[in-house]
Image (tube, rainbow, N blue to C red):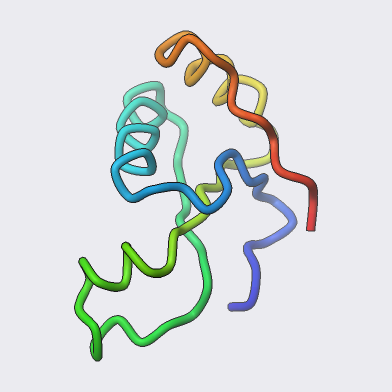
Length: 87
């Protein structure tokens, strides 16, 4: 898969693994499914930890949940994430 479906919107771009996990937890608790996607790279060769450090992932949510997801992250973090430009 070269990019997520048009049904998903990117909510975080090239985020640190910890940021992705925190956002995923907050959004999942609110019932918003998340999808990680990033540059294709051989995880098996490097291992997950090295892969995550070298190739940061993007976090996607269903397009119809984007505004709600941004509101949740803004409430939790005190700042609204910038929505990355559409691909």
